[in-house]
Image (cartoon, one colour):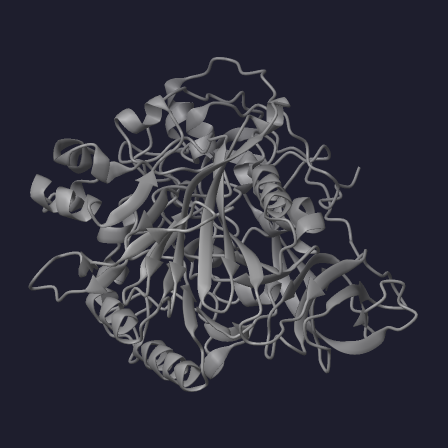
Length: 605
């Protein structure tokens, strides 16, 4: 029986676990692939709490590996900004086989009797799928290890396999956190990624689209809206870190939470002009199953609005840390601009929407090179581009500038002050943001809710954070929103996560706890923590879990997600942060509540 990976996924946990030797438990804890689930990067092993032992019942024979069925219905579809947003739109989709007549049809009416056609360009790609059995469960090998946790190899240099199992058995917090799964092999499949760009569209207009080919299949109908005049009001949704992991697909499906978060965001916001995602779309970019899962479950919402997507660090991760990152995967899945021909785990680019200038950064620049000898999150060429791009936007009359990027400069969890590649560029980037008078910095990566006061830059010799709170006049409007009036600083915002993996608000629990769960931050004093916490107007970790007692991270088991809605007009901005709660996979009602709100006005009398 073949497995169709594009069918709806199972949301179930199966229990049929027998006792075995303790050695079986240890066999996968230090697998480099398993470490990919941990603290956000290969610079250290995750510090996940031990909650429940998972000891699989092994079979001597490897389960029969199902074939990967072809899927030639257009899939993994997205519409993304690429170029002039008043008159164009970019599209991306996949098929297994090549269709040379592929195109996108764009219609104002929605019945496509007035459709315009735009040809697509196909790129042959290699997609790597996890091995599964005939029922769609992933197949894992339990690898024998020595006392140091290193794999034992045979006379041919191959790892010694104790036996095999599938994730039909899998359960428990350790499994969900990613610290227990064994070795999984990948199947390379040739596929085609299509890119098309619509042009000569009318501004401030809702369009409908379909992608595909007349010789093959044509997709469902999606829609998007072109931008209008400078100063016209518009609205967008911001969410982040959907980051669904393949090993939880059949255990606690995380892509379902990502889809539900976006659905709730679009329903709450009402008429939305576009969606902004600040990175980590998936957990392990090399495993194509994850892209399929998040795109298929989010399809009705991805196709409901245009998207602007920033690349996250996980969006270039290989299954095994020892392998090079898959730096082209993000751009295979999203048709976004590539500035300076730089594809490096993503790309950086900018666009304007109703006169607001949006700048998407790529914080995956962190490979040592002539351009970036110290491995900072952003290289020299990109840093110079940021300055030139925003200066040009200001010269063109942009009243508002919004940055969106993945790795945070300010957040309520540890990445913001620990990631070495971010600290390498922290002073330079915060100074540049201040110099260029950036209004908002939208972030991801740290899986907490946080919103700073308006911050201005200070040098490192004055303060480790490179930020200080600006003294800004404020007032409460007729709508009950508290507005900052003509701030000169920048507000940094992070809407937690659209997935299930959460990090704790580690800076609010005292210096002893911080240094226990993140020893690399042992330089911080309580005075440092107090200063840093005072930079925030709002921030916390809404999930309540015993995991945070001795860890910075949960077991990817949260049923609390967040998103933000931004309403922008000529001289006014309102940002509303919302929180979703409810156990989706158990059928609980999911509630949505606004938890934070603020506004900014410019040129107020």
